Length: 117
Length: 114
Image (tube, rainbow over all chains, first blue to last red; front, side):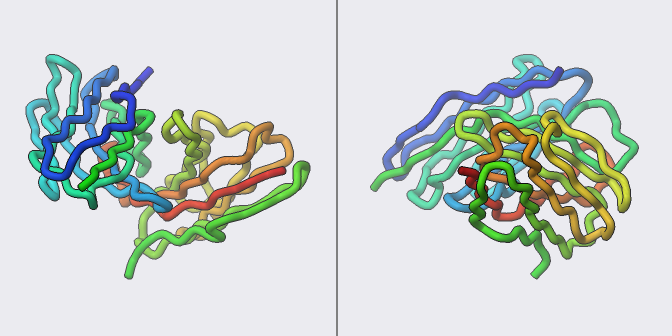
């Protein structure tokens, strides 16, 4: 079956430091890959996505590149801010085309990021 | 503003009681989902629905039930058969169709059963 593995947290960084959160996956077919972010007390928000190999998703200074050869989708940001403190989830959907309306996501366990001044 | 509303934010129940969590969306999305979030385990899919009056079990459906009588609403009932119901429950929706439509989440309901 599908699975997503994320690095253990928490990741603690000083403001303006470089961020990498590792994500690797196993999946059949050609999955789409996502990063979601969860701020304290809230639900998840889509941060970025990539739907095919070598695609780069980007948003709010965050980037991730879909690497099929290494089955990875690592999240990066060049300079983090205190406001980036949150839990980040890597996720994928099945590569099998779903003719219905639902997207069945498989999530990683999440990585907590703490950014300090 | 369009979005997903989950209520209540916090819910407390005694063991042995059924409890229903509300989820309403005004995004006109076809698909809706319920996830459970536990510390260190990420999100696990309980049930999902692709259309009104239709729903399918996810990975951990035992002890839960749902209904989808209206497009906007997808309530989740946590029954007394659920062995470990204390958790953070997240409702989501997606526009569809297809497998790469992003999910939109509500702000969750934290259920505590004692």
